Image (cartoon, helix red, strand yellow):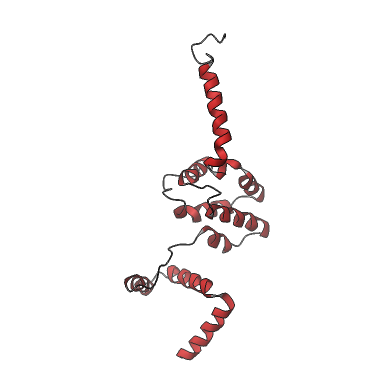
Length: 173
């Protein structure tokens, strides 16, 4: 293929998909190649300043590429958008707690972004009903949304321990 043929094809792709999408797909392609040449290209890009490149995909990109029934994908896209805005599992601790509540290993959770693919891969395996329940559950929205629950627990604890209803008490006031 000549240089001009390549440019013509590239312009067609650029017009059809846009620069960001072409860059994203090229990076995915290079990342998926398990050959020394691809790794060498990535090393040269870093060495010679080929611009800042994201490693990995964000939650929305990951979910967009999934082959799922329409409704489940819509729910996952909503969760992914909320995840990126930190409105769904806003801290690494929230992700750890979510994994534990689902019986998953949470020891490897160091940051939210590092486990986004793992999280959304798991979520994609759930039924539509379960996804909707998770999407509506305020407990997965982080500490700000948990304040009423935390306050109720504190009040309950104070009432139990402060009223003499704890272990060893007679229970009379």
